[in-house]
Length: 342
Image (cartoon, rainbow, N blue to C red; front, side, top):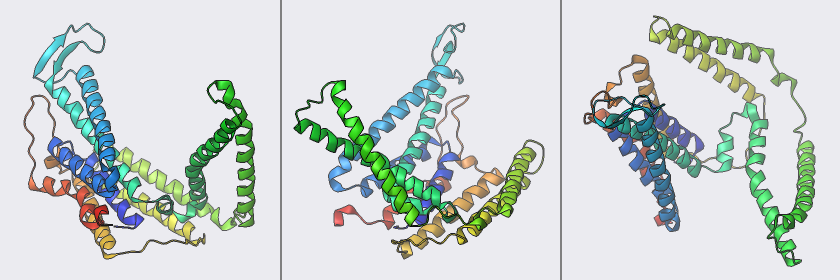
């Protein structure tokens, strides 16, 4: 897996799985596999540090999520202790079920965090910007500039600070940092002017009138109306498939708008992703998983992914289908190279 679209398919499949399950065993399996994938994608010398940092975040998230739900949610039959009911917010019984429910929420948040972390780790800035539709190429340009803004500011600040220390400025008090501001502002303005001149020379100030098509605006308003209508019908006793059909039509209209506008913009990418068999296999597989999960959501037939500790705590079960879905986020382990072999 080397292309941005294969990792995007992995991201979407992982998100829809994580957002539709509350089974703690499945969430724990996914979390462990995501950690294993992150270790695999990290350089051997940095693996311990990466694992330690993420385990620290996961532990903190699980603790806070469990504690907050344990304190403010007083549902369940397995009471550990209780406080007077007249105590504001925290009064009532403290149950084991509310503690486990908070832990499940922490597992979901931690898994989502790791999913986006690995997605960002797998792709370069250039690959991430390529995922933005060509119709929004100004947004891509602004995003690229923004991503390089803070590193360049830090680099110039370090250079100016080093020059000030060579001149005898101890840089210990707040007033010692004032001589840095003016050189930093001057160099930043110079770089901004140079960037503006370069963009003007390359024609970024030229706007194509064809891109401001009223048809695109009308279709966008229509798609918004379809989404609103689908949501409104879902509030009444209409079949679920009617709402999802309207959502699908709206999505297709928006995709058509992006495709039409993208064809009017001609951009040459100097570095293109090289598609491999593993990328095609990954996109097909993750696409099938996404369609399968969407079908489960529409049909409301996902009991094997559901679990609630209320009202009485019971041990969760994990059917074979849930096991197979839990292995989906770990598929890149089979499709990416190991850093140990480099």
